[in-house]
Image (cartoon, rainbow, N blue to C red; front, top):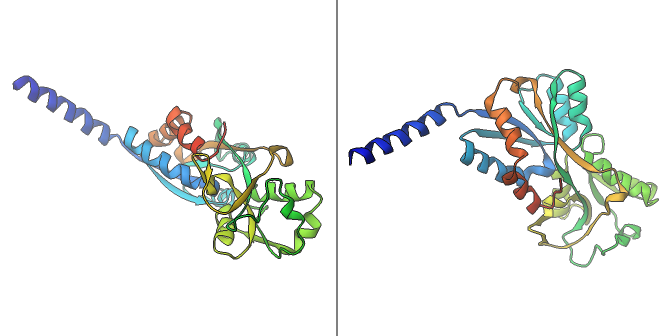
Length: 250
């Protein structure tokens, strides 16, 4: 009984010691990665004791906020250019930058049968609105513009584009019926390989620049154990398994 008590006491002390070193990390997360990151943050806290405090938004908006001294400690961008730019400007540590996921763009509608398997619906002149994220703020919005330009349809669609501040707002426009279809992130409409509602066309990757998404340690997080631990966790199998369920590659 004494041995059991000592073992239990030792385990309890180790647990308390781990909790004593647990910390929070403030994370700016690209809106397209919202769903998987919520799951990853929960797993991260369970496995490490550290808590990731998440803010979701457009990468371009986060860039402006970080330049204006927002206290984020880690950035999970929707592109690879923004983290590299922040590192060049001395606001992030280049040596910590890596690709945590590669996203996919999808043309999506809540209406069954509206979007065909080849995206020919984009040539339908009777559709009055097409939702995209603001290309100045959101890489997925720029990818949508690139697709339309490559298909020779940008001029035709320009007056009918409905722009959201982020890919989340673009998705909301379609989900609420504010636009009959829109370009959104695959992760917003797919889980475990199934798109559960409406109709869709997963855009061929060669129609736009790769949606390589980089993470980086920002200066406020350089001495934070939780920040470094999160970046390490994002490289691991547990995080990548979760992201893959939402259609991300690596």
